Image (cartoon, rainbow, N blue to C red; front, side):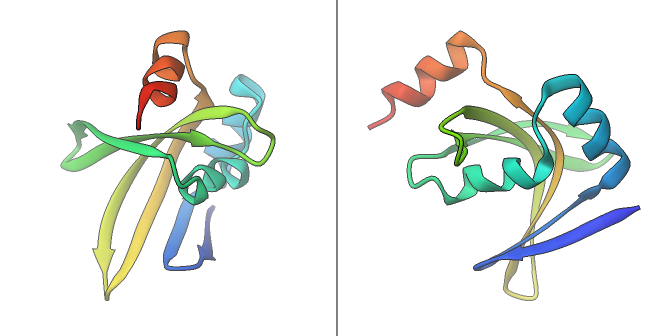
Length: 103
């Protein structure tokens, strides 16, 4: 089952089964993962291409003041940004430093 939510100019979607698995494995829901895109200091970098989809990683802070890494796809459909969340977890020490050192 897929879920779609909207937040300002962004449309989010994900597989609900993956969301539940991610919560069990990493303690982070995809609903919380959406919050990193509202962080004005979030950083996004290209990750890799898998099955023809370009994958991205975004690091940002959630409302619980936790720095998360969100793996996702991104595309621009009908002048609306669509983000499909694949996974989310707390950052590693190195990823956290990268986030903290951004201007």
